[in-house]
Amino acid sequence: MKTVEVVPELVELMQYVVEMLDSSEEDERSLAESDDGLQTEHGVGGRASDGRFQFDFYPPGRDERWSMVLGEDAVRAIADGGWKTLPVEVQAVAPEARPPRPAPKAPPKSRGQSMLDALVEKGLVLLEKRARVAEVAAALEEVALPAIDHPSATDEDKAATIVEARIDLPGIEEVFGDDREVFEVVKRFAD
Image (tube, rainbow, N blue to C red; front, side, top):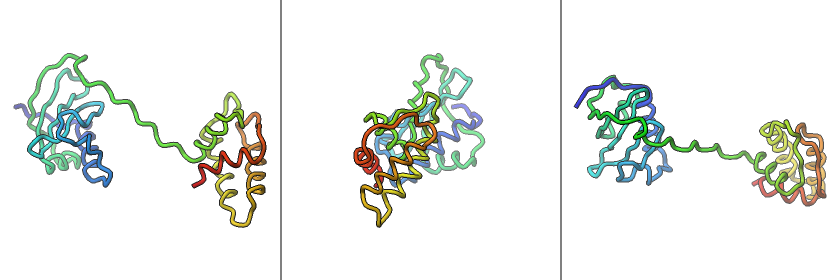
C-alpha cells in the first residue's frame, strides 16, 4: 500500500459514481458486481462482492495503476473533496495497458433537430452547404411546435404555417413536397 495524493480526475470519477448512486435511473450494469462494469477515461470499477466498490484508476501522465476498494462513505468523501490523500495499491503499467477510452455519448436530439433530420431524410428540405444545423433546427422548432399546438387552427392551416416558415428559415436552400406531407413529418415530433 502506498498513500497517494487525490488528483482531480479521481475526484471526477468518484463524482460520477455518486451521481449514479443518487440517480433514480441507476444503470445496474455499471455498478453491478463486476470489476469493470463502470468505465471512464481514467478508470474502471464496480461493486465488489462485499458491497463496497473496487476501482482501478489510471492517473493521467503516469504509467501506473492505482487499485482500491472503497466503501460508499469513502466514495462520497472523495467526490466532495474531503480526502486529500488515499492509500492504494500502486502497480506500474505500460501505456498500452490503460483501458480504452469510452466513446463519448451524444447528447439527445432536440425535437427541432429530429424534425429537420426527418425532413432532410425524406427529401423535403435541402440545407445550404454552410448551414448551421443547430440554428436551423431551433428556428424550425420555434415555429412548428406553436403551430401544431394551436387549438383553433385546422391541420391545413397548421401545415401551411409550417411550410411557409420553412421556406423563410435561414440555412434552408430549397423546399419540396406538399404542405400535408411536411405537416405529417413534423407532427410526429411535436408530442
